[in-house]
Image (cartoon, rainbow, N blue to C red; front, side):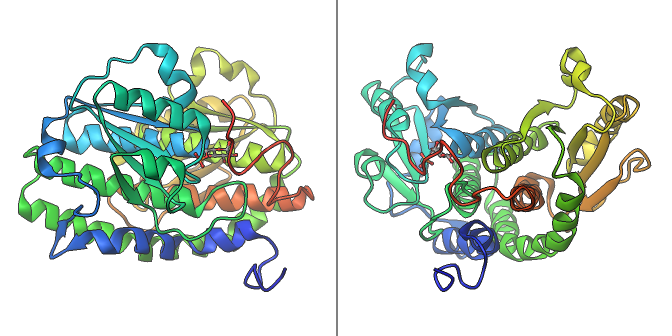
Length: 367
Ligand code: G6P
């Protein structure tokens, strides 16, 4: 009913708007006096220190959160970390050793592929920490420890606020892991916590692009194919942005590492192809700009999602949406927001069943 949707037309847009609160509720209880605390789940410093490898598993958007997590954990924790599709994990003969850490991500906590992969990792001796939204779900019960995302119930099949809360949980783990392994001192952890606690407010600012994204949807909803490009964290965010669009609008889309497009798929760029480029990492601005030129010179129209201090040449882009000022490491939490909104408004323009896209289920309990 309309009341359940809090006055919004769909659950998806209600849940997009709830994201600042979802991440605040996930972050707040785990920060005390400038330290990240995990008393609730057995994720001790000792455990974080002795892991030789961090395995991340999930499906769909949960996997995409994991891919962001992999980059963040390797960047600040300096430990090997691999994010893998849960349904592939078992057949890849993964090298899992006792004391490895396995981060299992699932909104529902019931996804069969993810559950099966977690059981296998536990069998091999890994400590399984689950990032789950649904309290007392199967994955939460079977994991060695749980880090709940307090996003609240998510109704829309396409996840938004649970995904954002998963990112917040991964930032928390990465921060404590870096501290436990001596890559971050107490002072640095304090600064990291301050930045993390500022994230809900930055997300609130990011949501101000709502009207702009609605306008862009009216312009571009009739495209038949869309490419999302980015490097590093922006590539990870591009994967989730692309999934959102195709899940609910049924427009074919692909996420590409910006530097990889020229090795094949650039042949698909033609007059009027929409390309959404992400450039939020200052050290990659120049490189991504040259990839943007590669597509515009072949007729593509580019929407750029840029860091607040983006200084590259914008002239090749039709539209530029800027992030509020934020540390580059946290940009993945912000850059996804305009692209969730774009997917939402494009699906609305196309009269799609936004909250219940065809052929998809909120949770999939078969392998
Ligand atoms: C389904 C949904 C996806 C979701 C995936 C993982 O396929 O359609 O939106 O990301 O499952 O769900 P989970 O509950 O494990 O996060």
